[in-house]
Amino acid sequence: MYTVPDQTGRRVVVTGANSGTGREAAERLAAAGAEVVLAVRSLEKGEKARAEIVARHPAAVVEVRQLDLADLSSVRAFARSIDRLDTLVNNAGVMIPPTRITTSDGFELQFGTNFLGPFALTLLLLPVLLKAESPRVATMSSGTANFGRIRFDDPQWSTSYSASRAYAQSKLADLLFATTLAEVATERGWSLRSTAAHPGYTRTNLQTSGRNLDGRDRPPIRRTLLPSQGVEQGAEPLLFAAADPAAEQGAYYGPSRLGLVGPTKRIARLPRSARREGVREPLWRLAEELTDTRLPGIAGERPSSTTSRADAEGNRL
Image (tube, rainbow, N blue to C red; front, top):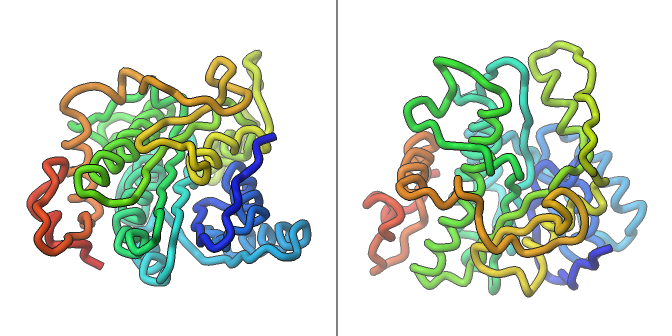
């Protein structure tokens, strides 16, 4: 079992921290000494998770704050409430709702919750993160990113809808975001480290809850013959990406056995879908436009070629 390095003195935000890999990551970060903020949509579920963590680790410092990544007003309110931060763990997400659902801002639910919400949250928190000595952002992607493509002609799936393909698009977008942010940080000389991870085939409520997001009660997805693992193992790539000193800038981490289960290993080569030319910059510009967020400007700094001229204006809260 992976041992999280000492996190004493670090303040960490974990999104989607009341269940699944987020809940596991939050507990292990808190047990390692981090001050952990459980960023959750349901305060009731967040408080339950907090109570469980503190019961197991009485010295843990854990607080609960509300965050709905499917509502940009909630994202902005949450970002305004954070005045100190060392690590942001973009974990929360939704998976394969059977019918097309939209967020409060009119985005397709998976694209909005899995990508646009974390994109906006990260950029809005960057001014606080960059004050930390060694800031980090770890973003959860998925092995399904291998099969995704960004549909620039219809990223919201408004003319046709495929739940699985929309999910793959959102997780590919997460991976592209994490690697692009790493390049931006390097270009600008920031100490920020941006990494990505995927959990392989980890058994969580994500596989079942998404099927009922439209209000219908459907049976769980049938088990496959593929090997699977629990959250204790499945959270390890994300924990490594978020906390390990050996985690490298822009690197992508996942399970070592068939990319599905087992200890964490470095994914040395990004999937072809994440290496395709002419995707990252247009995706970044699209996310900026849709979320109305920009990279923070630094006096005397020229905007990165990765983003638009408006980047130098800073975030608009």
